[in-house]
Length: 348
Ligand SMILES: [Zn+2]
Image (cartoon, rainbow, N blue to C red):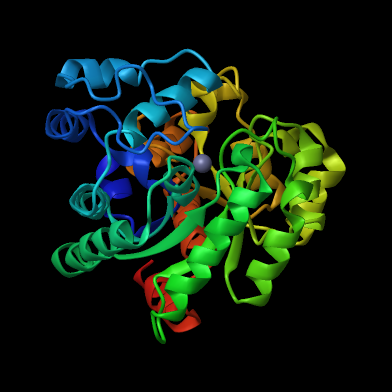
């Protein structure tokens, strides 16, 4: 079986951070463009010492060779400091969509780290216009759809999260019948900020009709997943890796058919999962959980959506039939209107 089958398989990507999709070439180009010190350093924001240094493609690639979760967060920061103006956001959105379409991806729900943008003291409205220009051009040129999830970045705390929610609601209110802003999320360091910290924000988001994704059980234990479900009423869980440590919790995820946004390569690269063979993908799937495969930060983890399905095939012996079920799950777990979901499922 070749990866042709996987490439042709229509599928959706549901856990992908825009800033983690910037390839080394693009990052190098952006670093050449922005050769002034980081302009928005508010008192609380400490830019990296070399945030304005032009980087070669090789140096950009080297930035992605970190050793642990903290190193990964630093690499993420190195990228966000070089994506600065509306044109940058337009460019990285468009390039992402081009790559996804080439992999058979028909729909993507993409996190944008609005929390980081506020934290560094920058306005978001103009940047969002850039994002939307990139999205609309990408949809037209490459034929896939894309929706935004505003990520509050949990280690900045709930007050910052409030600002992200308020901006999501404000911009969404201007979007008419089919808003591209679909939900909110909390990525970042789970060990510092447990889900319960964000209870009020999630309750308000839910009431306003936003969909709820929560990174849970990535670098923290199963209690973080339980908290995401009970306190935040999460509709989708990012990673859910540590549900494997708690049989009762896994049974609950199966019973309630909570969609799980699994990110295999990511979990190994951040050190959250020691070896790829140790990942509970097969176990979750056999148990009947609603699992989907995703890249998280494809360029930073040197993976692709096709690559993630290939791991399922090569490491976990997923048959073509089973890969197809994973693809179907990705459409089912998406936040598209029912009618569009059915259209996409019919492609399978
Ligand atoms: Zn993530």
